[in-house]
Image 1 (cartoon, helix red, strand yellow):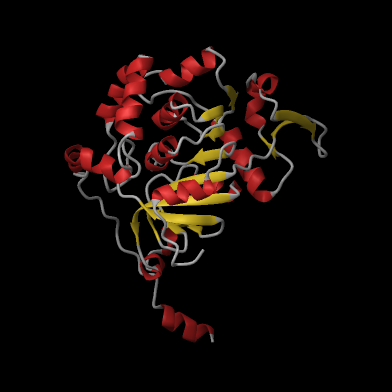
Image 2 (cartoon, helix red, strand yellow):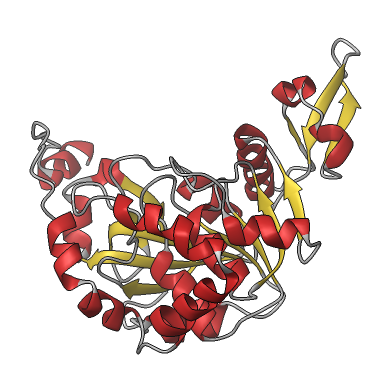
Amino acid sequence: MSSAETPTLAEAIAANVKPGDSVYITGFTHLIGFAAAHEIIRQGIRDLTLIRLTPDLVYDQMVAAGCARKLVFSYLGNPGVGSLNAIRRAIERGEIEWEEYTHGSLIAALRAGAQGAPFAPVPAVAGTDLPRHNPAIATVRSPFDGTEVPVVAPLRPDVAIVHAQRADAQGRVQVWGSVGDIPEAARAARRVIVTAEEIVDEEALRADPNRTLLLGRGVEAVVHVPYGAHPSYAQGLYGRDNRFYRQWAEISADPDDLDSYLEEQVRSIGGWDAHVERERERLNELSKVGESVPNAVNFGDNAAIAAVQE
């Protein structure tokens, strides 16, 4: 992508997320793309297949807003609190389709999709009853010892949405802390939207190359979205809003309260910037994370290295 391409979040979502798409919002405990999810809700994009290792509050909100036709996941719950009430109601009422994996088998499906492989072995699934319930899991006979091996079909989301601590305008992405499912989902997806706490120049990334997860391949848009993971967290920048996770259990328990929340706090506000301003005091509190800075690493002088190689 061109360095001149710096769309707004609304523009990036409108251009790259269409009704009927399969969407994977990344982030494992932290860097969950709530800002992008809220924009999808505001734009009223529906009939989506939502894929995540852990749906978390982000997909509970999207299911409640009517965005989802199907949910693909490997763990379902409000971490440390209890059920995801909106998703549970939708499943029990037969309002959405759903497909369950283990964490490992869902990651394996993404890796198979990224590699163009027809399937991936998932031997641990043999100890579960998932093969009887998930049509994407089957068995094949090993050509080496003749045993039956559980395998999973490849998974290629139409869109992966990645939130990161920083990126450059060309779509190179850096993450620290848990990288979670970001590499697998982004490489398997047909197109990628990156939202970042900070947009930096290429030199800043080259100065610390080992944190670079993505090199820009498949990235269709890079958007500057501070606090874009709230109420989850961004390692080193702001903490997890545990208070909101607890509050969500109460909000989502009553469908009327949930509808009111989505209308007042998501649909009717002027975008993520308005959310940040509304939550400014709380975000300031969460940003008091202290410091834990690792030892510096000397990557050497690039010019001197190049001269030696010549």
